[in-house]
Length: 493
Image (cartoon, rainbow, N blue to C red):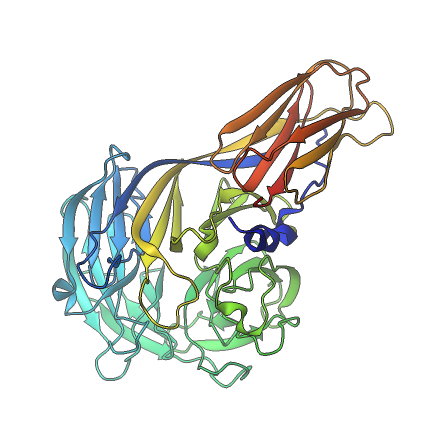
């Protein structure tokens, strides 16, 4: 990891923030442990090129299967009963979907809803397929709807609500389809939100991501910002509000890629401009709550940025957000405080020639979906890996006690980032031995030291990290009564 890569992550890490806990459990760190991977075969030419996996769904009925949207390689089903050795059990090629590429998918019960049509080139029509996965090893295509000559930009996302499918059809906006009978998809209506607002990008808005809350569909409209669409009448959708980051830098495309809605907050991924929290309590007047800008987006920094947020999904009772981070791969945020997302873990590997497009979480598993764009022109990063990496994730909690004195308990460290030498100032709220640990981004323990705790209110420890690989490290101090954590960036040396 380069010095530039680590420095770019610092604004969202809240490095060396005191992690005092009192009376209740709180999330200290989220660890991801790789348990398996599947890589599409490389082709002879161009060198190091393979099929991508754009998005996936871990089977929502708890069966050990993974469904992958693999563009020109179609819908691929993996048996992941042994995640260390995934096995392809079925492959439905574009020819099985009316010669349309497979771009995204959603699962509801024993049905998959497949987004069809290559939206990356705009040379295919939008489409939707329904697929029966009652037998997950043998998916059965039930019906295919094709946008014909009317909807010609492919499709990027789909959400199911009350027997209706809302299909994100890029420049063509939203298409509403009746899927109450999945073997007979019926067209209901379509709606294109105002494509002229805000009018600051060099390309038209594209319907990329969606979330539905009650009678409102929140649309991540790419260059068109965040839109609120009233869907109470499926025959007559109507825009009731629009929003754009008021602090977006000049000459920066506001690429709103995806959105998750939890309560009266919308969490939006905006490409290399990070994550935005928007108050949607009044959809007609949406306002900014917070903006996490880890890669300092500005103008042409789209090229070479260490991260590009795209897909986003909540987990652990809406306490965590898992985000695909492009060249930063997977980011995990604690949203226990809904207005202040805090980075608590991830699989953050900038400049490793691998980059994610999507991410999925179900149960204790995370799947990162990797694209291979090696050799293609005008790409923001160079990724030579196409496929998925399967992780098991675990949140580590801490229970603290009220401080017994006025000195705030926690860890203060410096310099941060560091080239090797790190000084820790540790304050505990009660006497007794504690254990100092240093943990790397792979959840591996690389250092441990017992602290005797005399004097327990203030201890100083000097660490030499120069023998360790550059990257992000978690520092923890735990006793029988309390636990504190901080995050440290080790620069290349």
